[in-house]
Figure 1: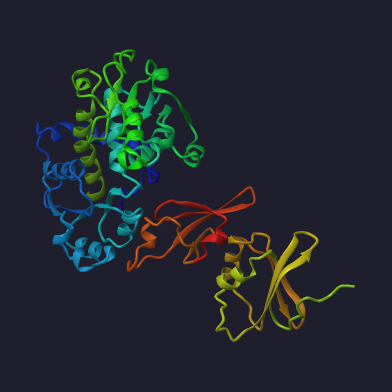
Figure 2: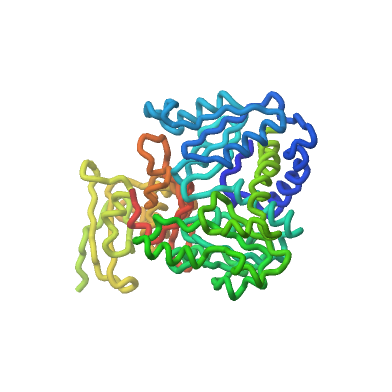
Length: 298
Length: 153
């Protein structure tokens, strides 16, 4: 039985395979072709934390492939509110369906769920830990929009300290021949320990120094609650905001990505430029999740 | 003149070259606590030519399993074991840490599922030795810990 818990469980070959499979599903994801390979299969969505894009895109992916979905979204409405353990919940739900997608506030919850499940488990985010399907769709977006993964230069901008999306993405990018620039306020820099561990061509930089060079600008939200006072937050978040002026020296082919939701870190005026790919990126979540679902369920 | 700090034992296990101050933790790892019926002696901060200061633990009448003894390497990688039979050293060996330890270390990450109350979860750590330093990584959250003596559960 195959689970998808952490991007660290995958090697370059696994990732390349999933991205190739995703490409084969793209027309199905758009509704242009009918493919019912998961007919008769049921996916159990176990979301202990709120989610819009991840939960919906898993649901769409499953339904486009002919399968069905049962959801546990409102914690209050389930037996969790009565004090059932995660282990018991997973044991019960794995008896109802053919695979489980889980999002949980505790780190390692997805791995623990997999150990208690009789069906494959897919991690859709475990606290500050892993979110491997987001990483795979990020890699898919880069591959589709830049035409390659090897040889790209990427700047990761914003909260590099707490963002699970960033931590997973950096690890995956280092499996390919990529050049990574880390652009963040000091308070939100990638922890030194993590920087030492990842290896590869990774360095800290200022955005204005590298903007002309990058193929991908990956922007994340700077969260207000990470700062001791609002004034400091405003100062910092303003200087990491992507505007038409920030990207005026960028290559024509440079793409801007964002895991969404955005607050004000990307000026809406940027949406109309050829660089903006964040909505396309959100769509790519569907074929990538189709590839993952078909892989674990068939 | 040499002075005997702790008397010789007839049969049992002697754990020598324990890092100074760690003997109580060694007993904890071995599951020897105040309720034990065993004859146990412990010497702390004994002068040592190799280590400066060291601790020693002697457990009379019991041959501790190698699996249990290996856990001592987590907090004292230089410890040596002497299995004693009839006052003679029957076997002498160094401890080697196990690759995986269960239910020995506690993850310091409060958001780790291994710390969730009521869940039937066991603590699991993967042990690594780099440049003579022992570190361990949590199976669930991936947190890496060093100086493992601080995390014995």
